[in-house]
Length: 295
Image (cartoon, rainbow, N blue to C red; front, side):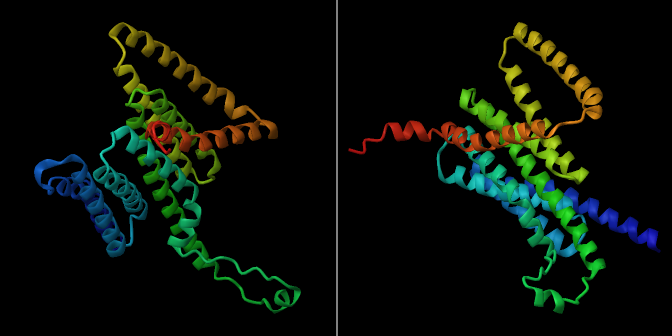
């Protein structure tokens, strides 16, 4: 009976997860006149509603549905702005990159709130310490911690996927500011993966970062002439092979000193701080301010 129940639960979960793209596609085709941006707005909204309903009704598959809901929320915000403001897609994508990366920084606190993880009551005085004889419910804390890990993984997958897709669209502008914004966002995704002890969360950020790097590289090679494309592909493959050799053979046996770790942290902070100014440049804010006739 237990095996049958687990198989049935797994089947229901797979069916519900398969309904996510169906909800997105069905809402995309509901909007009349076939306008792209309003269609994507409604599709993202229905994706959020469907994922939230699955979480409330099923109570399982939290990682999958939270990832879909997170991507849908960012999609709703981005496509709402894109529908109301007639701005080129790279500029909207650059703003989405900045918002998604800012959201990644507040995910730990959001995870504690979503998972209802109880915070420890720390006594402030000696009298409170003497009176504190309450023992925490370790089983409940362990259960909530597992739920929090699932929430955190789903939030990182959704935020990282949105950042990767938006970075590729930003780089497609061909402008130097768009390429720099996409590269900075990709580096942030790759560098943030080292700060998570949980393997699933680190893999989520590393995977989305590599997807963003691959998308930027493919888009760049697509605009080159055939001869230059062959040369670039050969050079990139050589660099990837060398990087794989270094990461797979040298780094596992390497002991990093505190100054080296601090250097990486500073480089990561510089990349994070540069995303918003670069995104504003892609959106054309600086050019608009220069041409304002304030006098």
